Length: 427
Image 1 (cartoon, helix red, strand yellow):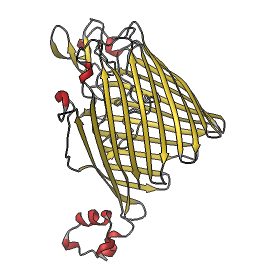
Image 2 (tube, rainbow, N blue to C red; image 1 turned 180 degrees about the vertical axis):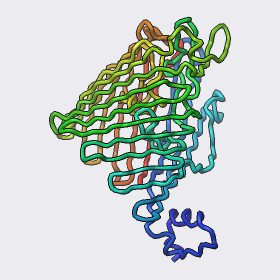
Image 3 (cartoon, rainbow, N blue to C red; image 1 turned 90 degrees about the vertical axis):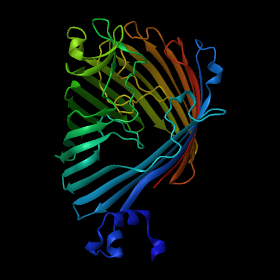
Image 4 (spheres, helix red, strand yellow; image 1 turned 30 degrees about the horizontal axis):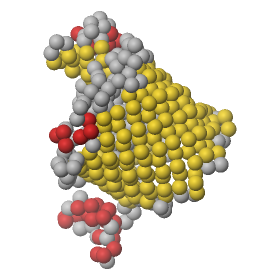
């Protein structure tokens, strides 16, 4: 009997008191386990024409992830959900761990219990309460490091075509956020350079509302957000249109402005902290706007994707993570999001082919252009990613790519050639 115990059963049993006297058979009944195990190896070869020692910057990275999600039924409507995860990153060059001393290399990392919540489902009503995942258009959708926080999300299915939802979140966490998505500081009206703060872990209260609909060939999702003392508002809208079965047109729009009390890390003849309201007359209140349009065609084992994304000249944020669905649309491996950047546009495309039912090869490319109002004026990017995906079986898959990113100027960015190997087992 003991040899047949699953890991899910052992964890479930660990949360029960001896006094409960629950039998072992009853304790493990109907417990569901899902998640994945993932191993990644990277070789990074950044070069900077302004650095005479750039040939010494090559390094390796080993990234390992384990995500275990346990769903323990209480009755037909309520489940307890617990998510445990672990990630370690080991950076090395030829003779040292953690080269450059800025990669936060962790050879051994403890398992973290980062989600625990009640899940309620009853007909058209669904809700999560506790420390929960926050799957929105502006939070991280990375399966290893999803956006999450403490609070409640509830939805109501009005009919087969319309669902509405609302959320209140404390202590939002947005892994993979880059607080300086423009590559260097942005500028407000008085010439002050700024970096956004509090985007990675937000103690502020976050309020959100959502409407999803499906009418004929159109699927849509509209979100509204307010984050106290950080953003006055963010609106996002995504529409997916299928004029024919094998083609999808995607349209994205985002509009956001800073709250006047948003704390910004500023550089103005020294390092200080200011609120957005102190950094230039009404500049914080101007709407930062981002848009994206793409066409994706998949037919007879061939995929062709082409798209265009653009952000306007105004300072602001329209997302809280570079892995947020509203902005992470560019198919190249490393520079895939311009939503929070200023006066930047990107043309992008992808061509993929199914060699056989298990093997897919793909080539992705983008041309990113920084306008005159960007801090990195006229610093354009050309990037290519060539990759191969292989499905070993239904649970185990491999993904290998080589990415080349070249910047016209290298004062703020370094060119980089990246190789990555991934093995992922999902269950």
